[in-house]
Image (cartoon, rainbow, N blue to C red; front, top):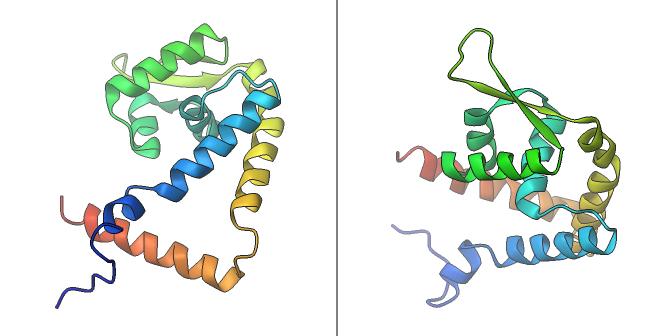
Length: 149
């Protein structure tokens, strides 16, 4: 028996990310107001490099849910901004490792503070137990769909 509790018409607008889009727009606005020359897409790549510098482009594809051409374009643009550097892997020359520049490392604190502030704004008035339930449900939705590949 289907477990679909959505009314017709609200399903896709909800599932496709109304909240996600609103959060991304707010964060982009905060970046712009703070004078950070970053797009949300670039920030998402930097975020994963701040967690683990020297990831391969394929690892960044997987972490950001983007395809190879998108990551290549993002890394190209981040290189032009002197925020990252591609280095061919010593063990496999077909693999590029992406490393943060000093400039990108210096952006981390400000960018992460703005991201945290944005998330706090988004979750204002939402009780922690509901946040946890939401995380569990969205993880289950993700797991269900990834398992169908």
